[in-house]
Length: 170
Image (cartoon, rainbow, N blue to C red; front, side, top):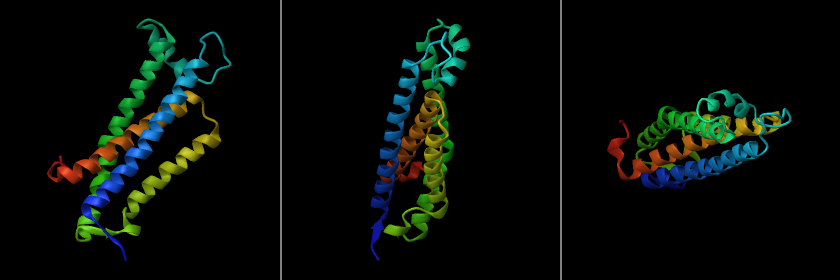
């Protein structure tokens, strides 16, 4: 059976997370931009529920929809960074321990431990479900942006593990 060395396992995993996260970041930004483009405070026929909810908070600054969009982006970035730091870091550490437990190399078909595969699969199912539920564009944008940023952060943790393995436990 084909075994992959420690460095390649982390490189492939990091690349997978980085690519997936980048696609979701792009998709989330486009959804929020589309919601912003269709947004009108006086109109009730738009697809931007979170953006409308940000209007009172935005009015504290200058009242523009641009401020509401900036607040949504900041909220999505904060959630994504927190998820990346506290959830994805655990996923990466679990994967590192999985590889180390298997002697520093792992079979191609056992690249991720079962718990990590469950997390990845549930995130994919959630993405599919969001498309089926018909959530407003800004809600989908915030969710996709936050998850994308968390995945990019997870990819960075994998790359850090290749070049600076002693930083992992911090």
